[in-house]
Image 1 (cartoon, rainbow, N blue to C red):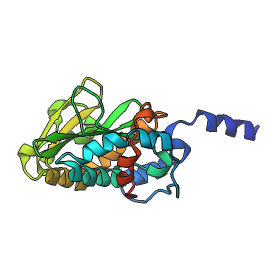
Image 2 (tube, rainbow, N blue to C red; image 1 turned 60 degrees about the vertical axis):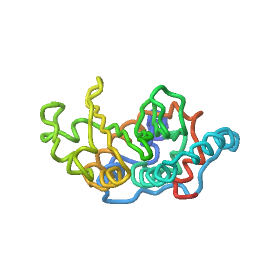
Image 3 (cartoon, helix red, strand yellow; image 1 turned 45 degrees about the horizontal axis):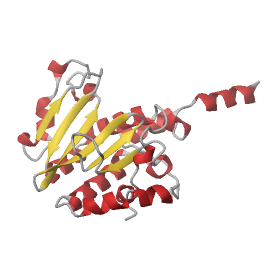
Image 4 (cartoon, rainbow, N blue to C red; image 1 turned 90 degrees about the vertical axis):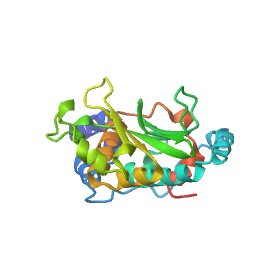
Length: 225
């Protein structure tokens, strides 16, 4: 009886719950503990070579170095067990062919997590997070948005703007400039919110964007390059 229940439980487990129990996930979100990652990564050489031309094109952009550095910060701080979960549970695309013309985009499940755009000679970032992590009372009330905190998390208040998509408990934050993006990611409350949103979607199941994963960009996110 017990082995049968155990097998059924494992089969019904989705996303990163297969690797991290709820307590480990909470500790990682709050920065209380590191979580064990795989020592090596699984890689598709065919997919790596497929996106090398796009990666080389990105390297010719004036924002290339900033993009790679910010992706490195994001990958090392905002993605749990990044080697073990690479491609299957998160992916990064290079110059994706979408109407908003991003430089890079990080996805999980069916959801966009983080996008970088060109902004003149610099960059701007778009984060998707839970609205409840940025209201003063953890509610879904847009009127309770802690705007003062958001503005404090950037080099200047003008570097931050935001929007509320149609989905429940979803919030979009735009941050302009490398300095403000770095400062934003360094705020503990922001980092916890980004981690919580990312885990929400990585726990939903396999990544729908595996075919667009750019290993050359992932190298920087995994601090391999």
